[in-house]
Image (tube, rainbow, N blue to C red; front, top):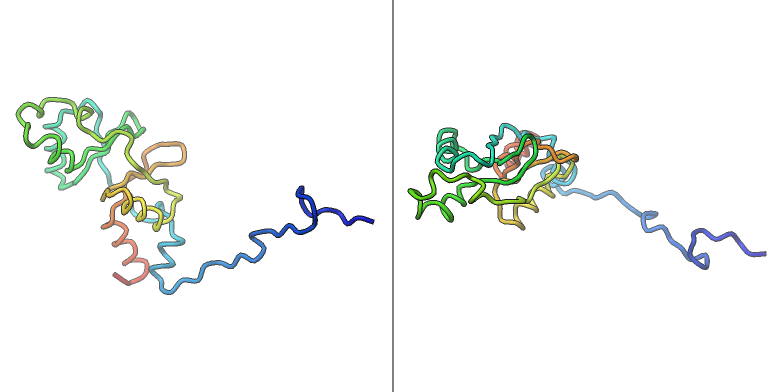
Amino acid sequence: MNEPQKSGLPGNDFQDPLEDYEPPEYSDPVEQALGEETVSSMKVTPYTSIAPDTTIGDAIQQMAGMHHACLLVADGDRLVGIFTDREIVDRVALEYDDMVSRPVRDVMTTDPVYVHGEDTLAAAMCVMAVSGFRHVPVLTEDGRIEGIVSPQRVSEYLHSRTGVL
């Protein structure tokens, strides 16, 4: 008599790939925190957002007054762009007099790279490293702005959590 099949595949040679799964072993507390802690577990606020029709001059004044390197550009609680010190240097500085009264939507980065609060710290650091951005917006699963993550915030969190760094 034939034995029942273990899967929908022909034959009885199916092996569950997770059968021998062993949880990762970490070499130190920083590595463990990066691999297990989520972005939402750290401080992702404060952040500052502006409307897309905010003038470039007003946005720059806000950034300078708060000593921030970026502003999230939002339509309500939805991220539509990011305005950073890079945009100021690359797109505004040489033509400042002509640009100062234009809306930030003209020079912001549209569709910015972002992470979710449920992503691990390692995933957030990877996004920053691969994309080349120091500040990455944090969104909820339904797309609302939750905050912003930066290498400095990750470093401060890891230090407070592990005592290292």
